[in-house]
Length: 321
Image (cartoon, rainbow, N blue to C red; front, top):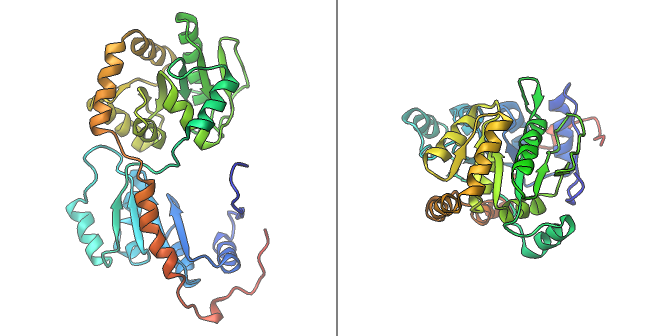
């Protein structure tokens, strides 16, 4: 990605711990954020370098991993993305582990993202020849999933072509950075391989209908009050999120089939009252973008600075980018 100023280190799978240790000592961070990655060893390495640690778990597997006492004793804060409405409390077992793990600060976070701005969105819409509330956006997430031998990007592309042929409405597909399928570009659909997040979210916010997957992007779209269909990719949390959104009436569920997705998109296009009903529900109970709250929680950890660390823990081999 080239749309941010951050320095990157690519670590080898073999000897990952040693490589991570050298990065930590070279960068000397005040805080290390583990986003759905990291085991006890990795947390211990970060803390041995003096850094404070924040663990974000946004899918059930990583929620289960971090809510163990041995992990909790190695973190300074935990943020959990609930995978469904009503899962923003600890179970009795999780609470017991949290207590025995030292009760680190724990937050349940709906969604975190930098909100789109009107000027950037207007420029992008103009460059694509689109008008606000005048197009359908198809978003297969990262694009790395395969469904019955077909990539998610191609599956959503087929749905977009069906909608474009059935209704006189511009259709846009953003494939995602992990798309590996053929680079077909039909004349009925505008296909974009990748967009910076703020521009991408601006397209979501301005679309009449969004065909989305059931990942974290769904919560971002709903936070922006987008009228969505939700299609679960083969990941444990996506089916839960997509079904929960449909049960709450804030999205239409669709199976992972191009015709099914197209039919639900067309239903939303043809029924303004249904779209307004969904928007009314979203206004009342949509997920929240909690970026400001998260920054308020993170700032004190940064201001406290790193902990003192024994000099003998410094790795012998120098860092290699």
